[in-house]
Length: 67
Image (tube, rainbow, N blue to C red; front, side):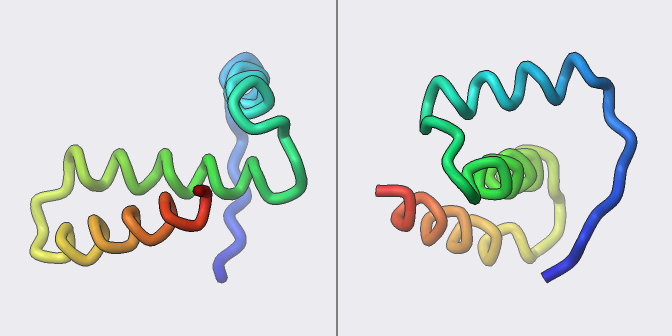
């Protein structure tokens, strides 16, 4: 696990939390899961490395956990 500290626009974070709440109820751990999924989606969309297939498998595993 890695801890990331970042200063983000308050409006973006507020909307992100609202979307998570609407979709999942914002239970403990939902923010982390949604942020990880958003990062994976970004990687899958823009990465040019060979590790993309590894990330695709990780994304599938995370989505199965949600179900």
